[in-house]
Length: 174
Image (cartoon, rainbow, N blue to C red; front, top):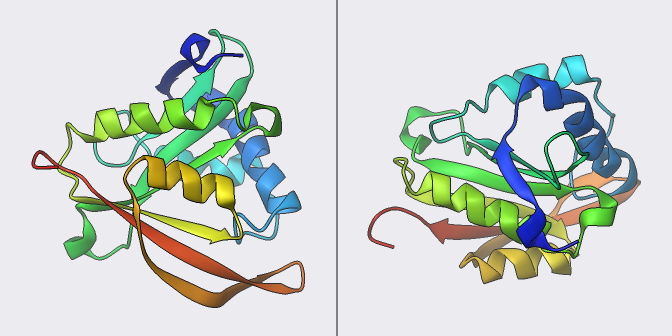
């Protein structure tokens, strides 16, 4: 698969089942997310609704062709709930295991940062559970810089995990 053949579009409620399954893979199998219990699609519905088709908080999905399986998704979400943080977003990408390493994450982030360039967003942040060299590499390619690491901040699978935080400046003067 070449990433140029992949289409990116806003996520919809009709995508909820495959998006939930993609995320649940990471819940069950990895420390990439610190959620520990898989979700039902109904439990993920508020998350989906928090990402409208416009504004700072977006959900984009990638698929080969309309109607084909979803290969992954990218989001920009609220960084923190307090009003002074409203121009900062937390971004993430989740892919199906067979889409990893094939340019889909790059395509999703390119599309996400393109749409965010039209919004009042000043900074993007990404928390990366370590070790995760592919994610670190992806974020650095997009101009993120490491701003700090929380040591042993999360416990999953009876092990403590560090989280590295990355920051990217956004906006018209970048």
